[in-house]
Image (tube, rainbow over all chains, first blue to last red; front, side, top):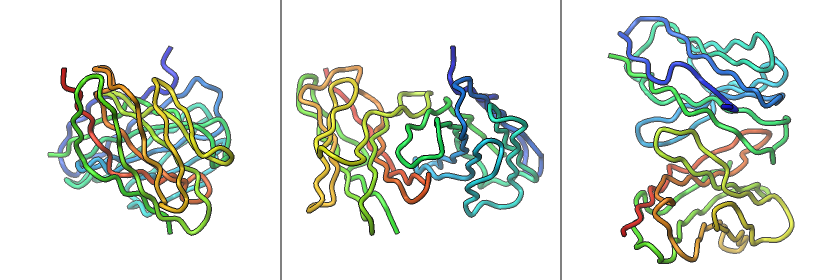
Length: 114
Length: 112
């Protein structure tokens, strides 16, 4: 069974479109995250949710809106997609809101904006 | 502020040879340090972590890393490389509450 699953795996779309990436974890974790990995492999945190509550919101354009319907799901909605949004987006989760907690990652969603 | 520097974006070793992947960090407070591995088309997996206590940390798949405060380093080593170790390795530092900063990664190639 996949611990952290995200869909779709690949997403190709035109500039200006709105798209969503879904993430689900079956680990019973309290905390979920979205990370963005750019073409240079730099991995940067975007958002963190703990029990459906937004904890971390790094400097991310407000075109990006996370939504957590329950603590097992954290979806990422992106409005008015731009070329610079092309990247691999990773969902992750951890047991608790603690700095030494292990992160469990999904396999990534490769977003290509044309 | 905390940051992570990984020296060498690509490292090649022969099968059976020592693996050494370098990581230096800057931190204003004692850090939590991590190594993650990313296999092709997969998410990152935790290899090992240092929080407190013993400075030599053992992880999965025979990897280990030593926290050296005087050198601000957390290099990853494995005595004998295996073909299955070919992957990308990311060093990371806890940047504050739940904020993990990753290095830019080192791609390890293992030559038969």
